[in-house]
Length: 270
Image (cartoon, rainbow, N blue to C red; front, side):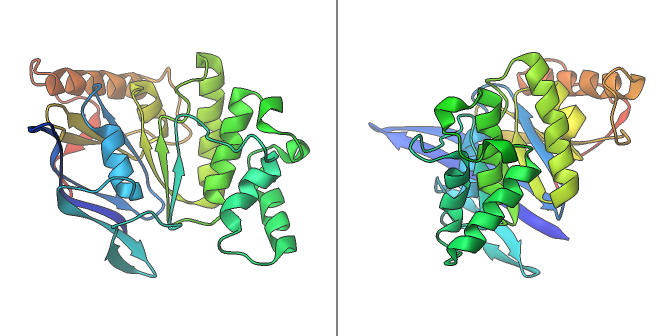
């Protein structure tokens, strides 16, 4: 079942008499419980696309449709049906870890005791139950990002949107958090749309990968890695997938058209 439909989406930024086309005719679908990543070179409009889906930016043309209760409805503004995790955690420094998670619940759950219970539940999910009363300044960068993920999940959104959530982490910590995100995904079965610059991260996490080319951002290819889970980064199939994605990104920047490799590739969906 389709959870999210991006339909012929375009975005132009206009100012001082100049118009810059950031996205053009972007179309793809995300299925219910699917993990999809968006990759592309810097400036291809990945974050702009995610912000439009979140309702934080307005598209110049096209539509974003999100399934709620089995029917697709157009997205025109922010809403609790979409949880957003940014590259920076944006936690409230005056609230504890638990208080930050409860913030999003205050708009939908009037019972204070129930908010408390839900926040504790999501702290357990991200393995931070013992840090409930700590403030952001008392948490490591990775722990703060876990709180941000718990806060985004607590209102039970239809889809989780993630904009480079691990970009500021060192390589070893980033690998650990990729495994943690996989665990959370398996437990919650949330539909996830991730923006990342990392080919390795996209190949390791994703059911499908949307490759954007730049100037303006358009869908070059949608790749479905032929990789069983759990995945091993040293396997021949994994290395073939990352090689194909590297070639596609080269093509996105005007280099030679990539050859097919040990992945399934296809055109636009929807």
